[in-house]
Image 1 (tube, rainbow, N blue to C red):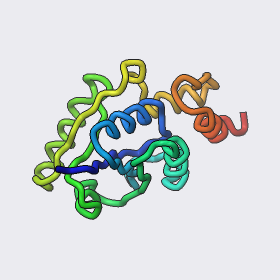
Image 2 (cartoon, rainbow, N blue to C red):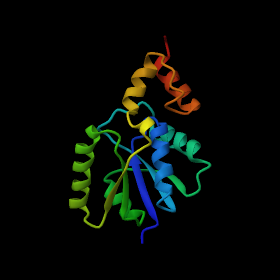
Image 3 (cartoon, rainbow, N blue to C red):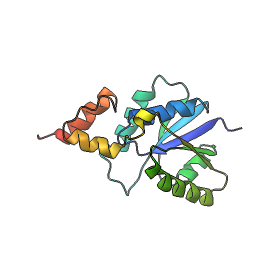
Image 4 (cartoon, rainbow, N blue to C red):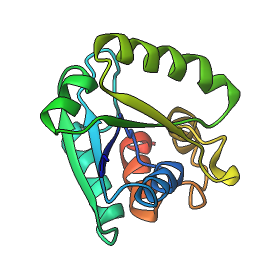
Length: 162
């Protein structure tokens, strides 16, 4: 029985939807590693260090959460962490095709690793970091989407000079 799972992503920035999935994963696993990906193909707003710090702050009261970062394939990282379970979030049907394709690719790369899909609370099912960055750049109130300190950090980066 696997007691530990990895929830990997870019978390640029962390949202209440991400936090909801972390809490849901903790209902199933005693340890959840929240792993920030170094992805050279994405152009994140926040550095890996900043994203990890945000995640550590929002999960500081959640027993069993470890925040880490990784380079390379998530299945290789899973082997290093000695776990066989990856958690992925599905918000809308539009996520399914990409997530399914990624899960099957990971299975082909490493048949011993399983992917479990979790759905966030309905009120977070439409959230995306990309959409929130766009809204923040226009000065929107993001208090119902992200923690206060994340909103401040977003606006500081996006609204400087305005």
